[in-house]
Image (cartoon, rainbow, N blue to C red; front, side):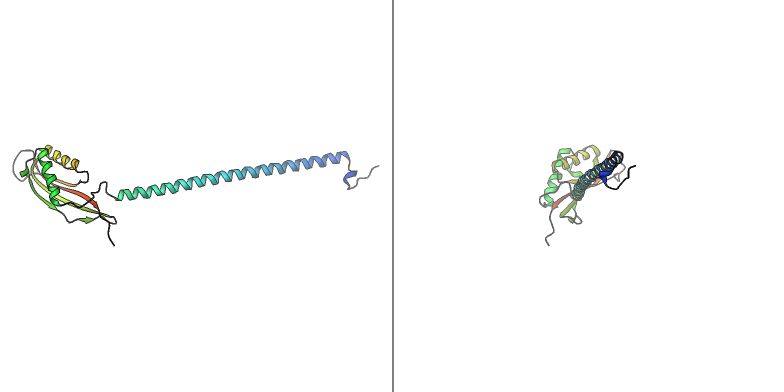
Length: 188
């Protein structure tokens, strides 16, 4: 009869085989756990790269949005200098002649006080024109000629009304506001 002792050298081959099998299972479990940790690390690293890329994209979008907002706050076209009213009136006279409207239909012009655009370095100059008994087709041609020949001008208001006479002609009275802006930062 044989006695079993705690010494590994006296273990039976059956016990040694079972002991080696447990070591292999334990080793395999450790390898699987290490592999799982490595996969988790790779996943976190990938997520970190994705989050960084998204943060960079968001930062770019914020910068672009701020740039778009600043462009929306500025006029599309700005004149380099303030001009005398006589220059504008000469442009009106030339556009009237080119459109076929009689100069006599031009009743008055009224320059407005220049106004600074709120929180901007731009000053808005507006002049109102009053025309009477104009036919619509030459009047539209007049507007097009005036605006086409000066890219800094814009038509900011237009009011058409029927003449007070009982004429059955296709004539209208017109009040048009033309505006240009100049770059003139505040000097503080």
